[in-house]
Image 1: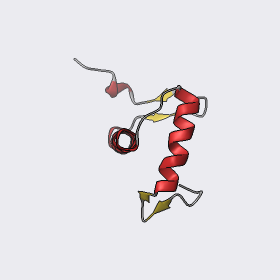
Image 2: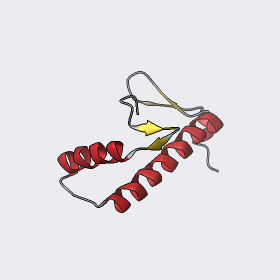
Image 3: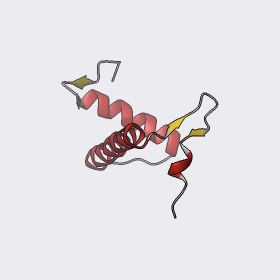
Image 4: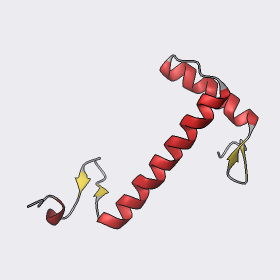
Length: 77
């Protein structure tokens, strides 16, 4: 996104092409543009939900990557 591959928050064709190449290099799978757009949208929604949950529940991350949560979070009884 910082490389100018979006326009008003929407990925450009150039951005999807770059993402497709990076995805293929990392995962070893080649998807067509429609599949890639769908997956990008899914991941964007999952990330938004994750960020919302972090803000709502008080659960967070420590500097070392550990989970930082109040004890009431784990009291399920």
